[in-house]
Image (tube, rainbow, N blue to C red):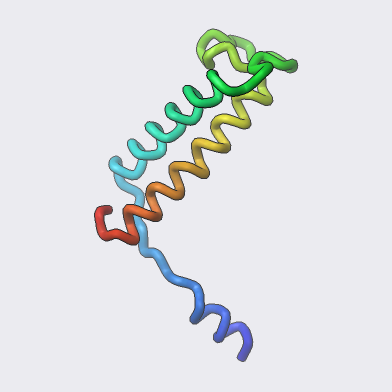
Length: 87
């Protein structure tokens, strides 16, 4: 009984992956990396990535932090656009 009540309260989003969704996620990750590059105090903290010049000079913690923020940002944009009916 409680499970069916809880399931009824959650909104279902039949969002299907498309190239537009992928492009939004890529752009939001690039924006997050650019924001992190200018705001992280020690972006090249240890451990280092094998080819850090390909990743903007970030170490592992900086890369994980910026891409995690980029995915949160991208998911918010995608869900927001979906709820507005734009996707």
